[in-house]
Length: 332
Image: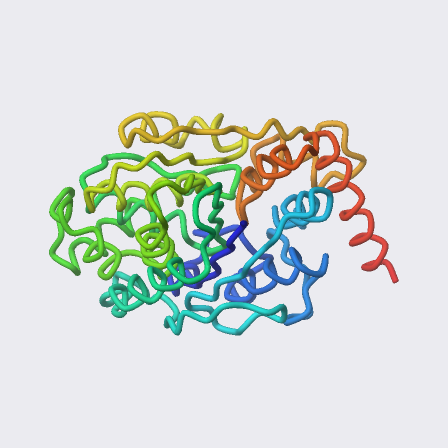
């Protein structure tokens, strides 16, 4: 099964930090719109298609293409969003993540963890592969903060072509000073790291894994955001096999510590060989130039499609088709 966890963090409101939306004002709606896109092919809960500031589409269209092409069963889990999504979803009762520079970011982290753990005990299949994906605008920065608190001196990726590293470092300095946390101080208490510096998705996915049977195959669909979850899992003393499925755009990002951190954490990786260089649409061709990169389980959905016998070429073709429908609709 494929579970999509959607969350928000107030940190995304920082200008220049997140490119997961056309503007700072619409960023809180991105995760909900992503859930709509996966289910319906376009947003229903909001009236704008999720794009970056230059009009490049959300990677949710890649996931949508895989879901439709390979008949992938999807469960949406709401873990702290501004609005509920339009499709059916499971409610974890989480609050939106707060800005960690101003106070604890996920005050209910332990409650979210326990609710997600019970959800997995009730809803996760017994054994087999279970894929967990996320949509959290601003989530790479909360990932960085949690990773630093756990003692990993790394850098995360970005949906922007130019990673705003200096801004992320500034936020780490301010948030860690506010919380009185130096690098590595919370290496033995990952839920405290999420509570002070993270986002609700991290606590939810971590709890869900904790509730899964050990014989189940855990696949985290995402980039450095999911590596932060894997780091929390290891800090809890859980060393079950984990695979992080991402795109070549993340794996090849020279500003990201994806490869080295994966090795340190002892997780396997899958890199989806997506290629939009021949796409008739600039918005998709720009993925090849380092824009957007990953999100909403794009790389993982390509892997899931292959499990169901659908080749990556079909996922690419279907993505182009969905984008064509989006453009035709916007012209009307």
